[in-house]
View (tube, rainbow, N blue to C red):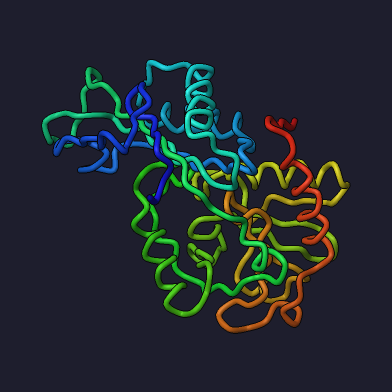
Amino acid sequence: MKYERFILWNGKMLDTTNEQPHIDLEERGLQFGDGVYEVIRVYKGTLHLLDPHITRLYRSMEEMELTLSLSKAELIASLYELLAKNQFQEDGIIYLQISRGVQPRVHTFSFDATPTIYAYIRKKERPALWIEYGIRAITEPDVRWLRCDIKSLNLIPNVLASTKAERKGCKEALLVRNGIVTEGSHSNFFLVKNGTLYTHPANHLILNGIVRQYIISLAHTLHIPLQEESFRVHDVYKADECFFTGTTFEVMPLTHLDGTAIQNGQVGPITKLLQKTFMQSFSTSSVFWS
């Protein structure tokens, strides 16, 4: 089975060994990508950075004019119930999706539809070797829409870029819009130059990743200077260190871009320090920062 036995399906726990979920043909998430989602990391059965994930989910829904009857607290309780029901004590992810629901297929939407909500757990080990030794990436044009800050279901540009990277033997695609590096196809991006961290501002051109936010908080705690400002591809090649961040990527070093090594392809000391400090958060079920 690709996911654990019990899933959260429209307010109830569904035992998939006895019943499979049914999706209507006129489900707007299916036909329009009219919905939002979150991927939440689970370490040894413990939800990681759950509260900021749920906060971002509700922000995405607000931007999409999508209303859910469940409060944040009720949704969080459902996710804990999902973990308990599956007796899940391993490393994995929870995939959580909310779409606008079922309506006759027209582009305009009404507010009387009942949202479709589901969540499931899937086992997923940490990519420990990649984290230790780093990965290769390619550059790709950032052709996404201009509301990348909404974590919506519309991911075809990301899918195509990620697939192209995989075909070239790489693990990520670094997206570039009008000469400016934005982020990865499924991650955020940082570079280090002269002891200072640089990352693209959290505006409408990137998704403000939860791990991105946490790494920024760690940088402040560790007194690592940080600038949220735009930079170009040639700045990446001249960087002292580079890394991606993401829920499943954690702090992922970039060692080669388009076949060219960054600083001889070695993982840098600031990256290693952030990795070590980030790993200390795994034992805490609820992690907050200011």
